[in-house]
Image (cartoon, rainbow, N blue to C red; front, side, top):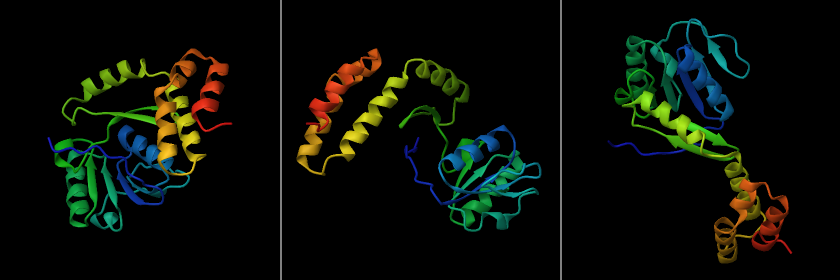
Length: 198
């Protein structure tokens, strides 16, 4: 299959989105949330704060400087976008034909700082949607709070073996159960005991 799961840091990185259909609009919104510098090319692209909107047809020169390109238009336009993007050395994600691009965007389930990505390699989008809905129903908000508490406790301690041991103890202890059951007193005890508190 050849796919390698990866979370990219896109803050302040130039990213091109071509196409203003539902997928293109979702990509623009997600990229804005990631802090990317988005250029959006499509005849029907609406004015969008924080995005360089080019309300016209795609031109090969649009890929200049882009680190990542999302082709979210018709198959014919996407083929042109992919060819131009690759020639310019950019990674290209095609919404219409995953195998013809350089990667895919997984379905995401977010719980605060926790992100769970799900993919069928682009071969079964309907199955991905069904599985995402099933998993989302089983991943409670408490899991996001668990990650947030672990992160905060980790940042409060100096790097080294003691921090690693403390984080392992906190992550494998009763903190998650206390969060899932809403036991605030137990959460406080866990953080004080294993999270480096006095």
